[in-house]
Length: 531
View 1 (cartoon, rainbow, N blue to C red):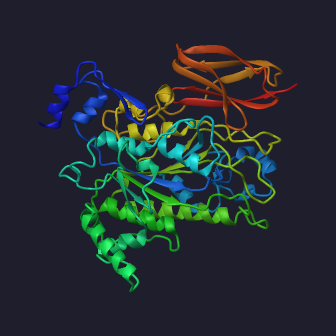
View 2 (tube, helix red, strand yellow):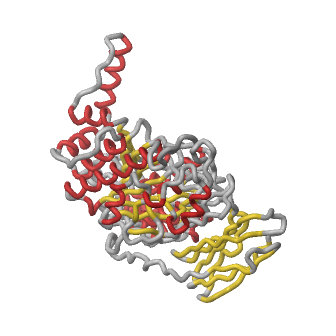
View 3 (cartoon, rainbow, N blue to C red):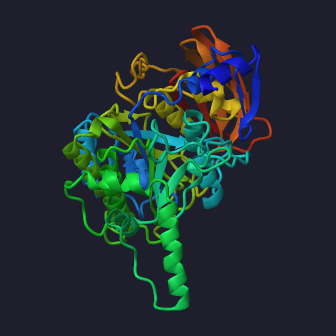
């Protein structure tokens, strides 16, 4: 029996498929549901590719994307690591914000309309452990939720629900996802099996396509290692198609030398051009845990962080140029992420400590270029506990890419994330119109959003006044550690202006943030509690 006939004959009119995706309930009420339709048609018709660039270690976003309009507050908070104002690179079409002077390649992509920065991306109740925070970003889970599958893995499982049984096949002869690295990360883990494969490093990739292996020691153990490698090559289902795709690309444009991220992205470009139907590629670049000596004291535009950002920028620029040279840039969108940002205030070791929200970059010719969001709020007298308040939930970035780049129905997208945040996932202006037939990107973000509070400063309570365009409206109260203390508003409204009260009884004096969200729009309002 064909899969389509089986599904049609076996799903009852009110079928519920509980806990399908590691605790994320997926419901299919009849054969017309989007999820069932997705299963019936097999894979969504798209040749789009997503490249995920992981910046491991917790990147200091405030020295990567610099709030020039609030430069005095920025400098006061981190004078020993701050980038001089006259060294900041401007972003085409954006005023009051710039990027690190080492990122000239990315600056060029902004000028070419192929890059976007998303300000202050994070999540409620941030975790400052490298391992746990990385798991949260890779799984798309809530911070208090253990999830053992990745957001991209769940997407691929939805598209290829029987994997690995019956794969490779005529419809999908290629790997579903490829990671350049020794292990396939949680991002690509499906509900039951890993949906991707790993290429250990660039050397192993070139050995694969040339049919050679690294030499082994002339010992009994070396002979056993050689045999294991031979068996592994013989049983690797996808080695032949990868080799064929790579060998179909005899020439690429120039990449920077001594740049491991560039080496990885060069492989990705070659495989995309070579014709693989692989949808997700993941690469990583480490060293961003800059607690000390982040900059050179004599010149803060140089040092460890500058070197890292320069290599990231140069690698992405070379990759984008190569995609254009190869004629496939319209098929590829890339994104950067790091497990967390750094604190607003620097430390005495010319470094920065683990923090909360941070900017992300999107790159590619299909990207709606520019900046999403506003410069983060920086207190006039920042303390060691002050964090960048979140503007965008990182899962809204993922959800938008799944809907607007991979062309999934919004209902299916919602099913891939924790049920309690589904009505908070935003469709953001990240991808240009026309990427998905029949899907209209959201309109440009309005600039006249309204959320104010009075009095401000306040002693015990303050009134928050907000204007909503209608639909689901959401207001959170966040402290300087990035923790969500209260949810004041979480319901449907008709368009109009409303008020709600924030009672701060039991909370210490200091800065608090009201984060307003309505549809694709949001705004963060700083509020001060005094004695």
